Length: 353
Image 1 (cartoon, rainbow, N blue to C red):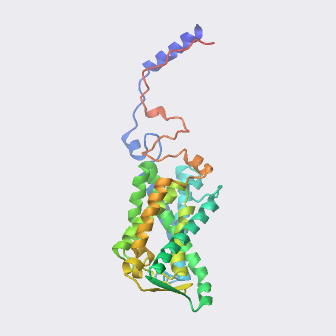
Image 2 (cartoon, rainbow, N blue to C red):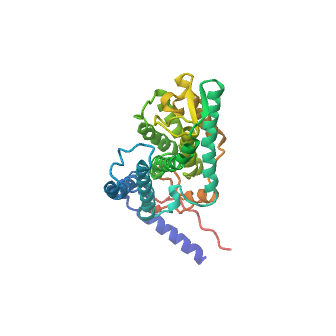
Image 3 (cartoon, one colour):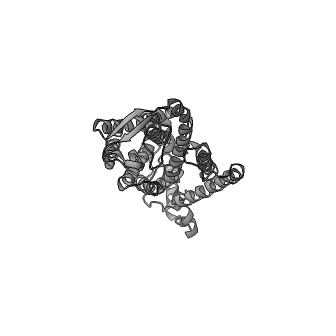
C-alpha cells in the first residue's frame, strides 16, 4: 500500500511540475530539437577546415614545384593537385568528425571494416564491365574500330601515371560530392533531396570541359545519380570510388576514348570513330554517347528496384545512431525530453506482486 501511495504522489508531482523552458532562438539556430548541430553549420565547418588544410599543403607546394596549375592534365606534376585535394578533404573530414561531431571517423565512408575490399573490387569490376559493354556495342554496330597500340611498351609505362591520376581524381570527387557534405545534408533533410542537390554541382564542375555536349551533360548528371545510389546503398565510398576509377581508366587507357573531353595519349587500344558522334560520343568520350544514356538509366532503375546492395552489418550498426531525415532521433538512444512537453496522461500504478 505504501508503494502505491508513493507512486501516486510521484505522478502528482509530475502533473504539477511546470513545462520545461523552450530553447532560445539562438540555440534553435545552431541546434535541432535533439540538440545536434544543424547540417548547415556542420557543412560550413567542414568547408572551412578543408580550405585551411588545402592552403597549408598548396602554399609550400607552389614554391617547391612552380607551374603545377599550368601543367598538362595527364602528368605527374598535375597529379599533385589531386593529391592536395585528397589530403584536404580527407583530413578535414576526419578532424571535423573527431573534434566537432564527436562521431566515429569511419562515418566518412572510408572505414576498413568487413567488406570494404569487396565493395572496392565490385566497383572496379563494374566500371570495366560497363565500358566494355558500350565498346562492344559500338564495335558491333560499326561505329568504332579498335587496334592495338603500335607502342605497347610506352602504353604500359604510362599505366602507372593513369592509375595514380584517376585514383586521386576519383577520390577527390567522391569525397567532395558524396562525402561529408552529402552525408550531413542527408541527415538534415532527406536522402533523395541531398543526393539530387549534390548531383548538380558535380555536373556543373564538368560543364565547361572541352567539347562538351547536351548528351554529355545529361550523362554526367546520370553518372552522379549512380554514384549517389552506390554510396547510399552501401553507406561507404569504396564502391563509388572503385566504379569512378575503373570507368575513367578503362575508357581512356584501355579503350582509347577521351575522358569528359580530356585528350588521352598512350592507350592500350587506339580507337577510330566511324559512326555518328551521338553514338561514339565524339571528342567528349563515352560520356557523350547516347548509348551511355540508356545504360545509365537502366543501371539506376535496376539499382533502385532490385536493391542488390546493402551496407555491411558493422556499417549499418554504426549508422543506426545517425539516421537521415530532418534530425530524426536515433532509435538506439533515449529521446532528449528537455525540450518536450510531458504528456499529462499517466499510467495508473500497478499493484506490486
